[in-house]
Length: 114
Length: 115
Image 1 (cartoon, rainbow over the protein chains, first blue to last red):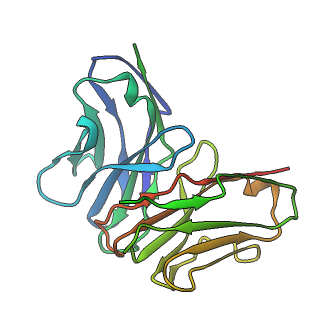
Image 2: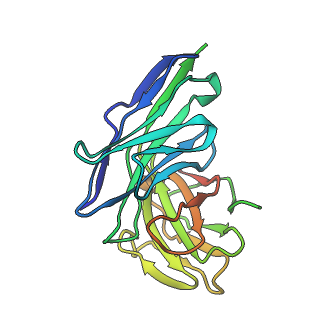
């Protein structure tokens, strides 16, 4: 069975500081991993994905994520947070060898404080 | 490129009434998904189409929910009759093809409120 855990419902960070949004996953095989962002009253926007290869993945709007197989984690990071980064962030996983379904975490609300 | 279009954006109905949502995916995208997003939760897949065929509908409550994609482009999702617990945002997404590394592109959703 596939699952995703986002242990923090809320993350607050000061503008200009680095941010991290945590995600851990569980799949039976090798994973595809994704991060999406959701702004109020909008659908989810794709940020980045990990397929294979380099453990550090770079995505849109200056975000990056680090894949750690031993810790089964895929944390989202950004070196310097902007107020406009305030939104709801979802981690998602898909098993490469299994179903095509994307399984989403419950989301982490990021608030960047001016 | 135009994104995934959904309508209506908002719908309010009473329980036991019926409702339908419409989705137009990104042009050329063969795979279409319907998700249900309950407040405070991540999206949950209801049904996945590849062209006009159903790939996965294992999470669709088939006693009240139905979906179709007759010509392999637009899709409609229907609820009949609605229950209070159906209050949620219904998201449509599409991807170029079915495949593990394909990102899904989402519409803005339809927010359904059941009174």
